[in-house]
Image 1 (cartoon, one colour):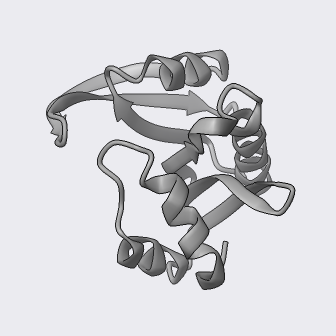
Image 2 (cartoon, one colour; image 1 turned 180 degrees about the vertical axis):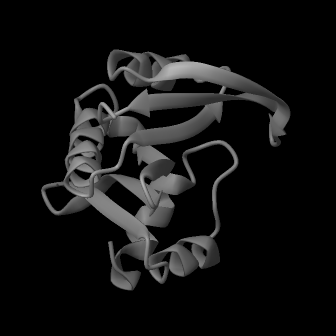
Length: 141
């Protein structure tokens, strides 16, 4: 993902609840411990993943797929790429959080061996919703 991709990324992001603004994406591109990947179909951005690592921990900050391209394996491909990157960096754990009502995402993460590790009451706004924290162990220590 580059600055040139941000207009297309924003089209996908605006289809999600509580979207980031363009400035937040721009700032993430400058973070030295951040990785950003795009999924494209016929040259069109259809999804993205943003990941940050600190020492031996990774956190998925954003994963989104355009509405017309969901349930086609795009999110799984983005996750697989992120997991490969994390394993290459010898990251032991990956964390994320999501809305409690996002059942499709929760199913995807559980299928990828993430475990529900906590709840954050009223964590999200627009709409107000609890957040779930999930963790995946990547390396046996």
